[in-house]
Image (cartoon, rainbow, N blue to C red; front, side, top):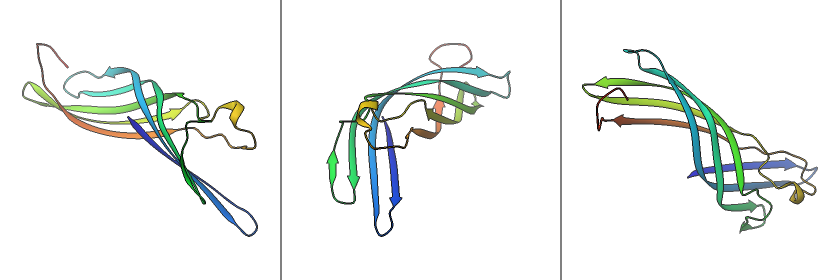
Length: 139
C-alpha cells in the first residue's frame, strides 16, 4: 500500500485556504531489472506501477471528510531505480532506491469543475533487505 499526501494551498487578498488530500493506493509494480556482471552486483530497474485507490480523505480549512468522489480509482506511474547487492556467503544484502512519477491527473476530468491545477503523484522509496537462496544459482 502506498500512502500519498498532497498539500495544496493558495492565498487570496485577505484569506488563506488550504487543502490536504490523504490517498492510499494498492500498488502493483511491473519492473525490469538489469544486473551488472559479478562481483559488483549493481543494477538498474525500470517499469510501470499500477495503483488502485483504497481510500481518500480530504481536509480543508473547515472540515475533514472521506471522499472517493472525484478522485480517479486507477492511477498509472512510471518508475526507475538503482541498487546493489553485497554477497554474504551464499546470501546477499541489498539496498535499492526507487522513484515513481504518476502519468495522469488524480482527479476525474468530469469532476474537476473549477479546479485549474493538475495533480500527479510522485514517490521515493528506499529499500534494504536480505536475499537468501532456496535453490542454486545467482539471485
